[in-house]
Image 1 (cartoon, rainbow, N blue to C red):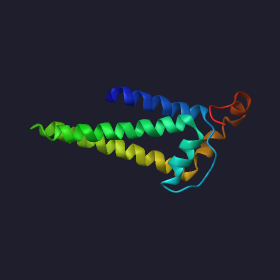
Image 2 (cartoon, one colour):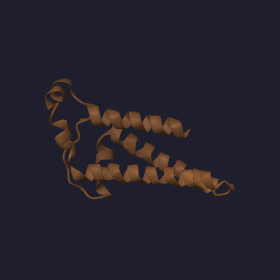
Image 3 (cartoon, helix red, strand yellow):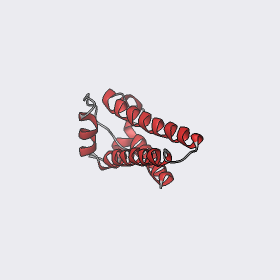
Image 4 (spheres, rainbow, N blue to C red):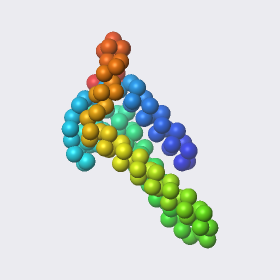
Length: 118
């Protein structure tokens, strides 16, 4: 289950990075995911999948604390920290408005072919 969520999250992230034109908006921590998620289905799916990864990681953490294996506990703590770090990085990326610098290079190609979101 976790590997399927990770593969889907990776695919959605690459699709958004390569194919979706994101408008430049400087919003705060709460408004960024709400605004961009409500305006683009790909970004909304990416946000929902990230929250599903967070929930799955929390469930694994709580289940693993019932075991006696210290190595399993440490591993799931690192997994949860990685997921939280990735979510933080994604929200900060939306808040920064810097994605327009990445997209300027191939803006002509996007105008000719269109994008996933309008």
